[in-house]
Length: 382
Image 1 (cartoon, rainbow, N blue to C red):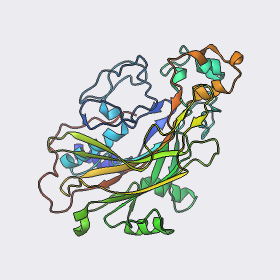
Image 2: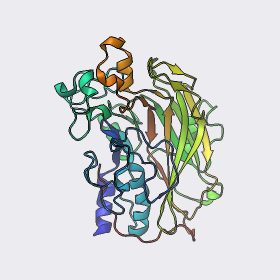
Image 3: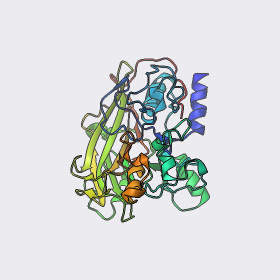
């Protein structure tokens, strides 16, 4: 029955929402049961209302995730569900969580795509239509108004702008998500991608011919000895008011022999944190970034006997969150009291996530490739 349900889920659910107006659910720093660190896991975490993470659910499922009640599970986060899919595939022969990433707004104002921090008009009609209401902790229900955001966007790499082509691209998971910015990323994986991908005019065509794009499965073969290579590029949001790009990262995940989930984050292009910043009072940016970044990275620790999953995350330079941007746009005397509330987050770092590329174990490989059998995983809760 588990195998049948896994196959059904794999067929019907190719995508998962990784970000929306009520927060981002890529990952969480310090969550029990995950080996490896990630300094950039704390974008718009609405459950950190009192400064402390909620109780961990262990192998159970989360509950009350947006109401500060119940526990929080690793399965509440897209990255760890995707990693859990590797463990389930070892157990069942089918990966039920081979999921591409998308984003959405999920506001209730009938304004899809309105994700600019400066013009964010609230989440729920007249309830938070004014800046004073949006900065009021008492307005909100299950997510306090100051912790909501304009939400995210979904990007699709389709052959053409037609209904059939868009749905085909979503089915093959050739999608990416952003936190609301209009960054445009590309990711390819292969065994013999061109090392000069970033400098050649036909780099995308060459990578597409030699590998697979985001959302794909990179099958192993005799050429796997050097490990898989990933070519990734990103263009910044073309809006002149948007920020430059800070860096591109490759996120790798795998399961060890004991069934434990591992994460690893590698910077492959760009600049270190601290090179750029933003002033809270004026929202003026300092430092510099890049309008476009590109990198080629080969996994030096590739083990052909161990399945792994890889995706790219692109970070903009830090910028003012809507809470600070809209306060800064008003004369000091006209700012509502909430503008002086230091408990409201004021800074953000916009980003984009590509869908992953899965690398199964090489045929005939032995040793470290099979995870220890585990109990059935609960269905992830969005």
